[in-house]
Length: 210
Image 1 (cartoon, rainbow, N blue to C red):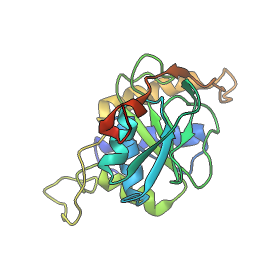
Image 2 (image 1 turned 30 degrees about the vertical axis):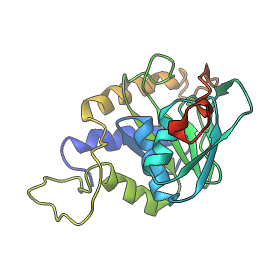
Image 3 (image 1 turned 60 degrees about the horizontal axis):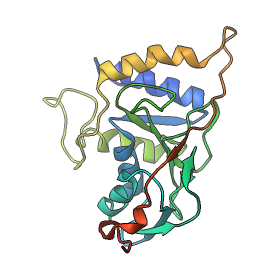
Image 4 (image 1 turned 30 degrees about the horizontal axis):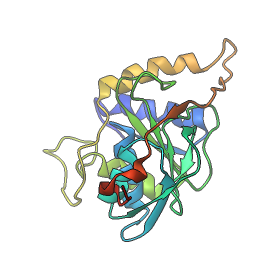
């Protein structure tokens, strides 16, 4: 069980899971870090991961940080909704947030950062999964390897990252989630967001060519 201030984050995660149809949700501080954790857990080290050439710049960064190699797919001039980082189980769902969106077997990474997202928290993200072991790993990996208790009472046995969603952001998210249901309590369907991005395959830092 979450203790103290961590309880509000747990409640927010449960509400996101209920709305999206995912068995489990882990909230983090942004979608880029959600992608990194999902890729690390999926074991992409040394593997080639294919993504659209036109996407947000942090996506190839997280592939590289997680030990993978970037391969760009040239199709399309923009991104709409969610796409898979092939052949991994990871999906970049920064531009999709709607009822019952979860795809079984996937690690779907959400974004609540910026003015174009349906759930506008200023900054935040989450990972949706049906893998209980992944859920447990994400909860500790995002919290410097810690369990959700006082560090004076913890037993440190895992290396993690400082990607935790602040409880005050989770509290705001929990309030805003009321707006994703109609007056009868039925979940509202949101259209996918579409955004134009630069052609990242032009930049050698990502493994592309000028």
